[in-house]
Amino acid sequence: MLKAALYLTVFYLLYAILLSSDTSYGRNRTFILLSLVSAMILPNFTLQNIKPLDIQFFGKFLSEVFITAAPDGTETLNSGLSAAAPVQIVYSIYIIGVIVLIFKLMVELLNILFLIVRGKNEGSRIIVFHGFNTAGFSAMGYIFINSRLATEEASEIIKHEQNHLNRNHFVDNIFVEIIKAFQWFNPVAYLFNRSLRAIHEYQADQECLTSGVPLVNYQNLLLNQVFKSNAFNLNNSFSNPSLIKKRMIMMTKKRTSSLASMKLIFVVPVIGVLFIIVSSFREINNQSINRTNINLNQGQTTSETASGELLPPPPPLPFAETTGNNTEGSNEIPYTSVEVMPEFPGGDAALLKYISENTTYPEIAKKNNIRGKIIVRFCVTAKGGITQVSVLHGADPELDAEAVRVVGTLPAFIPGKQNGKAVPVWYMVPITFALK
Image (tube, rainbow, N blue to C red; front, top):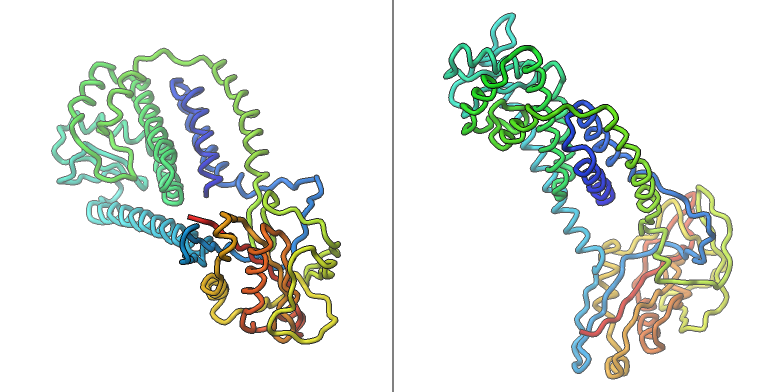
C-alpha cells in the first residue's frame, strides 16, 4: 500500500501538470482510471538484482530487539518488540480505517437501494425524493430528482444526470471509493476522487450544451442550485457546490487540440524510472535481511529446494561463540527453512520479550559510550535445545558477549520438522544496544 501510494502521488502530479486544464475529458478520465489501476498492480512486481549478493542467510530472521540504557545510570530500559509491536499497531490502525470506510460505502449503497425500492415506478428510471438538500443525482441506473423542483428545472437536470448514466460514471465512483478505502491514509487518493468527479460533471455539462441547451440558461440553472449539498458521497450531484466555479470556466473554455495528447509521451519515461526504483525495493521478511547493515563472507551456502533449505555451518567466527545451555550431540546439518518451523513457547513475541528482559547493557560499554547492532546466529536442535550460538555481525566485544550470553540461555523450543522428522534449524536475531 505504501508503494501504491507513491505511484498514486506521481500519477497525480503528472495529471495535474500535464492534463488537468485540458478539455479532453474522455482522455483525462481514462488516464485517472488507468492510474488508479496501475498504482494497485505495479507494486506487485519486483525486479531481480542480477548482481550477486554478498550476504548469507542463516535461517529465520527475527524482529529486532532494542536494549536501551542511560550512559550515566545503571537502569536498562529494554524494548523487546521494537519492530513487531509498532508495526502491529500500525497494521491495526490501517485495517480499522479500511473497515470503517468499507462499512460507510456499504451503508451509502444500502441507502440508495432503499430510495430505489421506496420510490421505484414501473417502467421509469426516475425517482422523486423529498428532504435531501440536492437538486438531483444519479446512481445505480436511476435518476433521483427533488420534488421541490419546477418542471422545467427538473427536465434540464434529468438531461444532465442521464449523461452520467450513459457514461457509467457511477461505476467509476464505486471504484474510486474502494481505492480510497485501502488508501485512506493517502491525501492523493482524495485528490483523485475530486478530479474524477469534476471530469464527470464536465462531460455531462458538455453533452447538455452540445444537445442545444442555451449556455446562459444552463448556467443560471446551475447557479440556482449552488447552495445545495450532496445527498450521498457516491453519486454525481448536479448541484455540487465545490465544483461550480470550475464547471463555469470549463463550459466556456476553448476546446483542447488533439495534439495536446502528445504530452502523454512524457508519462512513459517518468513511470518507467519510478517502476525501476520502486520494484527494486526489497522487503525484510523471515528469510532475508537488510544488506546495508550486514556483510557476511564466512562459509558457503548450498542450493535451496522447495521442500527445505540446507546450510552447512560456517567456519569458526572471530567473535564470541557458545554451545548454549541446551545442547545435545548431533552431526546433522541444520536447515535454514523447514516445513514446520521451531516454535518458542508463546511464539516469536515471547521469544523477543525473553531476550529483551534478560539482556543487560554491559557497564563498561555504557561507561565508554559504546553502542551498536549485533546479529546473533543460533541453532534450534532436533530436540529443541539451543546450540552453536555465534555473532555474525558484531559491534563491540562486550556487547557481542552479552548478546551471545542471553541467546544461549533461551529455554527449549518445540523442534522444527521436515518430512515429519525433527531437524535442527538456524535462527538469527538482531540485538541493538543504544544509549539514551
